[in-house]
Image 1 (cartoon, one colour):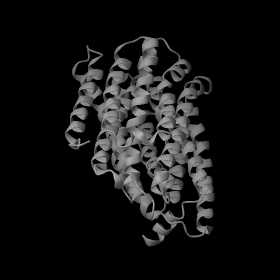
Image 2 (cartoon, one colour):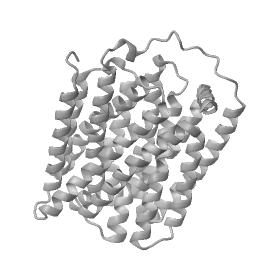
Image 3 (cartoon, one colour):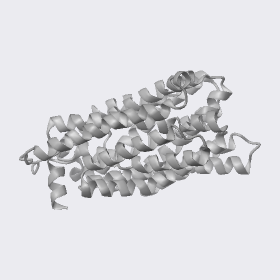
Image 4 (tube, one colour):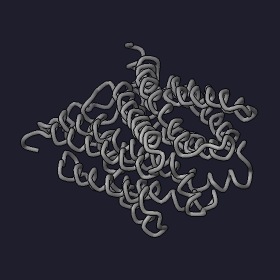
Length: 398
């Protein structure tokens, strides 16, 4: 542990930080090209409807909970860059095999293995960008991290539909394989540079911390850890149902990728805004406004089949989710010292939301198959439960 901690403490040079952001962008492109379009794979190749895709989303989300905690602890103990190499290598091999598999159950096994491997990358990358940083710079570093993964993910979703339409389903495997190979060798090069770098001689003892100034910091961390999985509960439900929405609105895969990526680009933009405006820290009113706005936008996206309204609702949804996600990751890094493990908990919370929303929606569609909106309304009710929990956790003087 001592040796690993020493290596973690040397993750402070600008070159290594830029390398971490490059790894993050590549990882976001590769994982988005596959996992966001796994539901298109289900629809196009296996004839899935909404309920089958929701079941797939639930399985991925719940498995991610445990995998993220394992991945975060592994990264903390064995090194962030080593963890990234393990994850990138495993995903590259898995997707290469998956490109030549046709039956559903082997495909499902490949998706789940890749889902587990992905958890060795995100907690490590989140911890890398904040490790060795003085607390007053945490806002900026987490902001750059958020803009990077969100921007790359938005670009991947924007172009992914066209990629599949023109290059075929197999491209959603092979394009990520190339990206993960690049990520593996970049992580290897950075790890070599890290081992040759000198010790961190900077002193952070005099840095003021927002968390130390705010007595309710631990409570805000808990509220954010509740709000974020519920936000992803809505996100993953939307992503799983988008193929059906696109079909009902007569959108091609290319057009669906362009139009339904609106909220992803808006979320990336919100990260830029929040990075440059620190006054949102430890503000209960803004957190709760974002959460309520997210509930309304989610319901509108799934229940009102109008193209203009869909775009407007996505704008609101993206802004709201941006603040909620930023809160969870920022407070995780600002309050805790074991950044790898805290990142794992942050990611596990995302997995809980990713699994819970689709699971509830699938159950509702199974119970009331003649009411297509039952899935959306069941998730709205669950989001309202999250709202009640946040109010219950609210400090008296927040």
